[in-house]
Image (tube, rainbow, N blue to C red; front, side, top):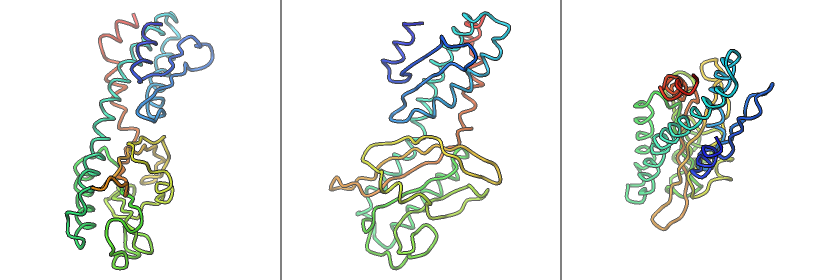
Length: 248
C-alpha cells in the first residue's frame, strides 16, 4: 500500500491517499490534476462511498485493497478525459490566437460559429465560452454593444450554452472574475453549481489561454463540463477484473 501511495504521489495524480481512517468517516483522497484537485475528489470519493458501504460485510483489509486499485485506475482515466476536454479548449484558443490574420469584420462571428459547432458536436459539454481583454480582438466594440455575447460596451465575452435546454448565445456572467484571474497557463476550475432546466448541476471549467503573435495574453477559452459526464468512469472501473479480484 505504501508503495502504491508513493508511486501515485510521484506521478502527480494523487497527493495523499488516506485509507487507514475507515471508522465513521469516508477515507480522504486528495488529488492533483494540473492545478485543480476537486474533480478527482468528487469522482473518487463517490466510488469510495459505494465500496466502503459494500464493505460492511467484508474484511476492512480487502476494502482498503480494492479502493487502492480504484484510486489508481480512476486517476489514470480522469487524466485521459482531462486531456480530451482541455484539448477542445486548447484547440479553440490556438485558432483564436491567429485573430490578426482574419478580417476584423468577421472575427467575432467566425469564433462564435466555431464554438457553436464544437458544442453541438459534443453532448457532454454544457457550454463553451471565451473572454477577451478589452480592446484586443478589434476596435469594433461600438458595433456590438449590448448584443448577445457582449457587454453593454461591446466587449467580446461570448458563451454558447445549453444551460437552458437549447443552444443559445449569452454574455458570460462571470467574465469579470475571469479577467481578473486569467493567466497564460491552462486551468481546471473547482466544481461550481448551476441550475440547468430546473436541476442543480455541478460543472467544471477547462480553460486555455489565447496568446497572440506578440506573446501577449489577450483572453481565454473555456469549456463547461458536467461532472456527471465522469460517471461512466465509476461504472467501468468497478467492473474491472483487477478491482473485482482485489475485493475478494
